[in-house]
Length: 202
Image (cartoon, rainbow, N blue to C red; front, top):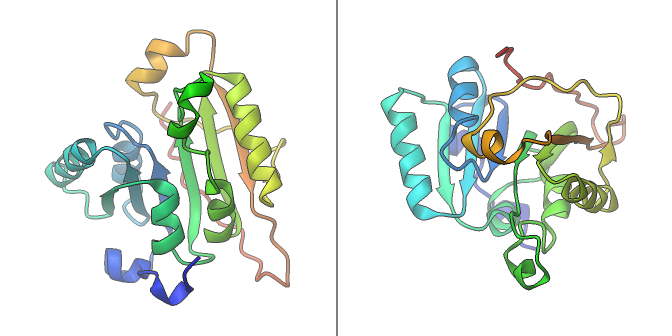
């Protein structure tokens, strides 16, 4: 892993010192764009593997005048490892990742490497990772990887409303499984418990 000095500061990316939330795999931005419009005082950074999808999302954000949105194309683990500083992200949102249940698809999976460790490193103390999927076993697997990396499963955390995507409406007929994991916060780590941005959209 490179030194933190190799990372670009969020203030350089957004031009301000506001809190940052990251969505990994935003697709068409059905969640991201709604939240960014509802919370202009929060910066939203999207990481999308598909270059075409990333460009479409940038265009959509620009068309809506959302100056608090930035989108980059690439592999999430690589971008976090070499571009995101320690203790700098207030929340991660990962919804419906890894539609690759077969063993032969393992190399395509988002959490195939050390992504969980990068999430833990880059979260502020008290920051959270939000996971959702139509596959309960996947949520168990991803949560276990995050716990192994040092995050804590927040079983008492309130599940907040969020926009649903076309994918969720199509494939989550049996319900959506959700997990919230938190980076431990204490005096030694510089306690900071952010108020996460979950606009009331119901």
